Every structure is written in structure tokens, then in C-alpha cells.
Length: 310
Ligand code: ATP
Image (cartoon, rainbow, N blue to C red):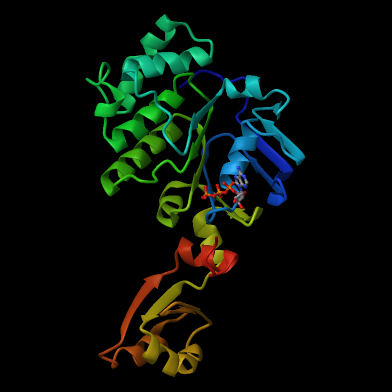
């Protein structure tokens, strides 16, 4: 264990509003997070995820509403609250002129840590990032995945209670992405509270305990991914591909399922019992279709609509 925490990790946002000039980015976002767990802010480009994180950190002032981070009001006491927060920004901000160790030292000093305190933590941080042996390496010599892991390790230099990650796996290959997920789960097992943004459904579904779906500056819904899917979506999905066939017989298929959605050349049929529909599709040799369980993408599309954002 990490000893008794006197402050309970806790984040509360109420009626948050934000404008960029005439553009309203947030329209009154409210949510509360208890200690522990991984919460994902899921939303299309422009939904307001990054803006929400910036406001939580006190980097910009809200135009309405209130924020409490670890029991402290933000932005009033943001500086103090940030001492117990780790941040992994969307774009890596490692200093290319410094080595791995120097980057950790410089970052740790922002938190008022002494060099000997930081140096004492570095072996554990490098082990966590699987960068043992890279202590004296230059940043430019690291791969993209290594840089992301170093950025994560750097965010832990102050032993934070809460970790914010803005799209932690964007641009990573599948291997590197899995490694990042593994690292995040380890932090979770150590009792950290994690809030991350993503637009990868798979990431949100695999990783998080709690989902906060944002759309056009609003928090649309919140809950555990499995619960939300079960609540809003029929259990079976049959995707039918190809425009002519699909359009010719859409009405016929509609009678065999609860609900349909058309996106481009794919017809999505949502059913409690898919068998009658599958029986009709099977003999049609030329038809391509896929039967699968409902997933987070179905939920996201139902709640936020299918039109492309921006
Ligand atoms: P992304 O996935 O693209 O990072 P996001 O969900 O993080 O999107 P935000 O970056 O918070 O969304 O943006 C919310 C809205 O505010 C968008 O409409 C965006 O165009 C606008 N916006 C964000 N930053 C600025 C800025 N600096 N100036 C003007 N408008 C901005």
C-alpha cells in the first residue's frame, strides 16, 4: 500500500461553461469522480474533451460553473491541487536537448522536489516505462512508443493521486498501445485515479470502468461501458454491406429487427433475436454481412448521431 491518504482523490465539475471568442465549447458540463478507477472522456473531434481537461487543471478559466479538484477549488487553488496531479499531454513535450534523466529532473523541479529526491525515484520510473538502460539516452533516439512511456513516467515523478491523460495512445502502433494499456492498469492497481480522453471506442471499452460521453460541449451520458451498452442497444448487430442490395431490401430487413441505421454503404440492423434476419441473409450468396455483439461504437453512434463532426 501507499500509506493512508488524507485527501481523497475526488473530482467534481458543475455546470462548466467555456467560450473561445464567439464559439461556445462547453455548454454546462457536470460530473463527479470518486477515488480510484479509470474514467474515459469519449467524444468526437471538437466535443470539448481537451477544454475540460485544461479547465480542470486551472490552465484556463471557466466562463461559468465550478470545479473542485482533490477537494480544492479550481482555478483559485489550482497550483496547490496540481501538486498531486500527473499530466500526460496530447502532444509530447519532452525537451529534445536533454537526456531521459535530465527531462525527469527538470520536470520534478516544477513540483519543488530536490534533485536527490528525483534521482531516488528515477530507477523505479524507468522500470515502469520499460526504459531501463535509457537513463542517459537522448530524446531523439527514442521511438514514439518510448517517448509516450517516458511522458507517462514523467507524469508520475511527483507520485500523483490523479492522472490526466489526453489521448495517450494516439499515433501508437498496436504493440505500443497494448503496452500503454498495461501500464495504465498497473497504475490503477496502485490506487491511482485516472481520467483519460480518447476517440478510440476499443480503448474506452477495454480500459475504463466508467465512461463519460461528450458531444458538442455537453456530457451526454455516464456509466460503466457494459451497462450503458445493455441499457441503450439491442444485444445483436447485423451489419449489411453494399448499397444496391441493401437499399432494395431494407424494408424487408427492417421488419426482422428492432431498429436500423444507415451509414454510408453499411446498414446496421439491431435485434434482440437476430435469427430471422440471418435466415433471410444466409441464402444470398453475393451479400456481405457481419453478425456481432453490440459494442461501444453502437452506443456512441446512437447517442451522438451518425453525421461526421467538423
Ligand atoms: P479533439 O478530439 O479534436 O482534441 P476535443 O473534444 O478535445 O477535440 P476541444 O479541443 O475541447 O475538443 O474543442 C472544443 C471546441 O472548442 C471545438 O469546437 C474547437 O473548435 C473549439 N476550440 C478549441 N480550442 C480553441 C481555440 N484555441 N480557439 C478557438 N476555438 C477553439
